[in-house]
Image (cartoon, rainbow, N blue to C red; front, side):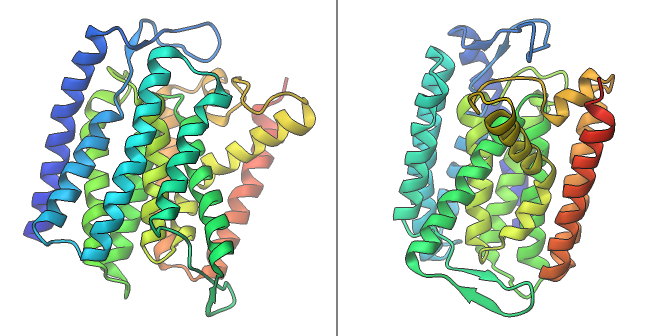
Length: 337
C-alpha cells in the first residue's frame, strides 16, 4: 500500500510540475488554441501541448519502475514499445498544433503508432465469450481487432476533447477501473496495477490546470495519446476490453453516431467539425460546462465500477441499455428543432 501511495503521489506531483513548465513553453512560442464562432467558446487563446506533461510523467515513472525491477521484464519491454509509439503520436501532435495539418495527414501519426505497438506484441490474443469461456484468436484476427480497438480509443478521446477537463476526467475513471480490476479480482497483476495508477495520477496532476476554466489544453497529441494509452493498458490487462469500453461507452457511442450521420445521412467528410456531439448539444441546450462534466464523469465512474463485478453477458446488456438511452435522448429531446 505504501508503494502504491508513493507511486500515485509522484505521478500527480510530477505531472503537475511538468504541466506548469509545458504551459510556459507553449505561451512563449505562442502555440495556442484560438477561439472561433462554432466549436471553440473560450474567451481568449489557451496554450496547447498540455498532453506532453502526462505523457512524460507516465513514461518517466513507468520506465523508472522497470529500471528498479518493479515491473516484470516482459511488461517492461512492452512499455518501451509503447513509449516509442507514444512519442510518435506526441511529435505528430506537436507539429499539428504548430502547423495545422489537414485531418487526412494527421491520421498518419496514430496509425503508425498503432502499427508500432502491434509489431511489439501488444495485441488482442483472446476475448471472453459472453456465454462462458474464452475464445482464442488467430494472429491475424488479433492484429486486426487490436488495430480497430486502439484506433477507436485514440479517436474517441480526440473528438471528445471539446470541453475543459472532459477527456482527462474520463481517462482517470478508465485508469481507476483497470487499477481496481488488477488489484481486487483474481487477475491481480501488480505491474499493471502500477501502470494504471500512474495513468490516474498523471491525469489528475494535469487536471489541476485543465479543469474548467482550463489554463492549458491537451492539444492534438495529448487528446489522441490519452485514448491510445488507455486502450493499450486494457489489452495488457488480459484483453479486458469490455471494462474500458463501458467506461467510455457514452463517448464511443457518440463517436459512432456522429460518423454515421456525416457519412451516410449528410454525405460529407467524417472529419468535418460541427457541434452535434452530445457534449456540445448539452452546452447549446443551456447546460453548464460543470454539469456536462459531472454527467460524463458520473456515467464513466458508475460503468467502471459495474464492469468490474458484472459477468460478460451482463456487460453487453448494460452497453445495449446505454445505446438505447443515448439514441432515445438524441431523437426525442436534444436534437429537437
